[in-house]
Image (cartoon, rainbow, N blue to C red):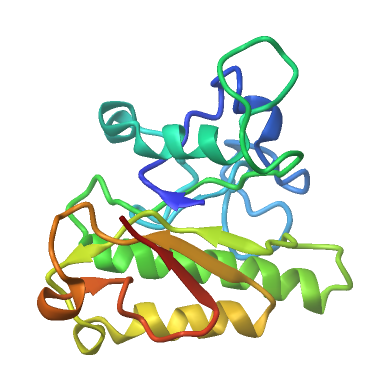
Length: 196
């Protein structure tokens, strides 16, 4: 799930969080040799770090809310039940806290997911993750595909390793075909966009 971060300690989300068992958290090493240090819970493409939940995540709360709808644990008498029963969620935070553009953070985040699936495929399922769907509830209003070609190309890259991508169109009340919206206008057939 590529979003603004995710509270991995939330009681209805904690049971469904994917964990990289080959990685020892917070030891400063890439224990599993996947090219990312300390990515026990996922990755922060915005800051290129293992921190998948920060003060901006708390303030906005979007990623945690979306994770709840997607896969909140069921039959526990707490909160809601997610729609993707028995799913595991890998949090990937795409917004930087250090002033790097969100465009670069999203690209790094998509590359992380792609590389982890490719690693899973090329190591006979010994490393990486068998990601099958990416939820990416992020975007750039008033932007067309020719302005951010990497986003659209990365949907095809994800498809090449067996990953479908899903996102919602902008929250703004406008015609995205006229004013632009990324990733809504990406033409990849491996990308499903939902709207109002």
